[in-house]
Length: 288
Image 1: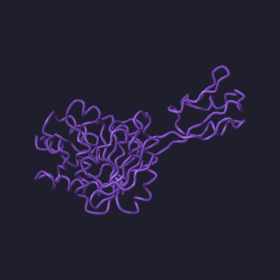
Image 2: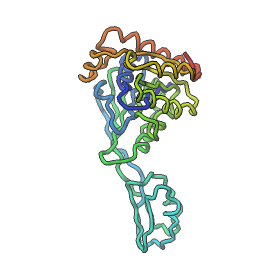
Image 3: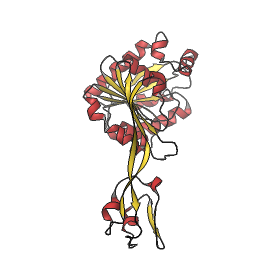
């Protein structure tokens, strides 16, 4: 099974939950950090990386001597990564999404495949589990192409056990890409106005995917009851509540897995693990 830990906003405790689940997962698993813009799961799990490879995306390279300025390439590009200005063919490689459409429609062969570095894909082990992390190149604006390359490993990784995804926060393209393959989505939130607002956005964004989904309320004894009321009214199961604790914050700041460090939390995350498994196995978005 593939499980994604997501959140509507950053700072809700998503990596706290992901790392604790990883530490208490009692079967074979691979831990995948798909928050490629700012991965941090490795800071807590401290994996031993055995394979670090560059990731590339195909982009067009222009040969103006062959170009007839027909503009077929510019017309097909939805991202304005290629255009013809006066008699000059211009390629903006950083805006290219690597679809290959311009290469296919150019009648004169004026465009050839080149490549741009996206970042790197790191593989290794974290304790008894496998570990995979995507890390975007500094200055690179698009994370979904790198995420797709990490996700292509999922068929291989699924043969070795479960997959636990630490997803990027938010509800934009990276977040959707991270949960697309998941059999179950865990939404981490907090009972604050900002947390509640972005939790609703995440629920609205992920619900059309038709996947089992439950909530984890972090710092649950702060704020108000708006998150719980919304979950009750919309049939969203609350799988776990984590109270506010200075000890948790201090453990997190030291790069420690809180389920391993603090007494009383192991049962919370073990119960969460079983809820996730039951939901994924039953395929019920409202599984409790």
